[in-house]
Amino acid sequence: MKALKIGKILLAEPFMLDPNFKRAAVILCDHGGEGSIGFVINRPLNHQINAILEDFPEFEAEVFFGGPVEADTTLHYLHNVGDLLEGSVKISNGVYWGGDFEKLKFLISSELIEPHNIRFFLGYTGWGEGQLEEEMSTGSWVIADADANYLFKTEPSELWQEIMQNKGSTYTVIAQMPDSANWN
View 1 (cartoon, rainbow, N blue to C red):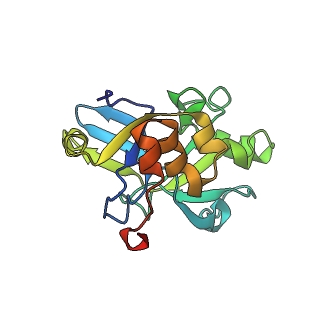
View 2 (tube, helix red, strand yellow):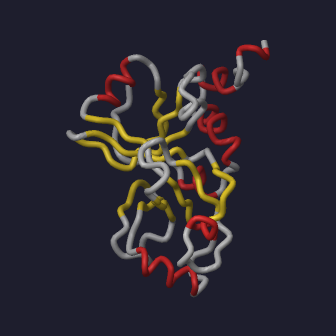
């Protein structure tokens, strides 16, 4: 089993019943002794950022469901402009988390950040100490390598299947399994 670490993608096993994580692709952004944090990267909420934040520049960016923790109060963002946004944390090549929010608004107003450079998330996915390792040992998640294209260039509805297929071998077969056993 590949080691759990920041920048990995966790793919929900194909028959996970929890509606928050059914066919979810989660990018792991923090992982340590106290637990782990990630964001579901393939669940758009069908809301634009301006519908959620009043004091924000006009911006055509969709907001995603990051996970069930603080889903109604906490906004996070992943982007590919780490060098422009002070305080951002590198998650993997071409993927950064957070950064100075006022500078973000300035960069958006200046058209230096465009919608294809950023993903906004309401809430996050969190695991307590040892919880993610336990879920891994029961086969709840498949680990994949992150790629910035997954966040910024791939259609969210195709993400789980594409990442699973990119793992090759048995995972290509898993990716082709129907979303519901009722379809068999």
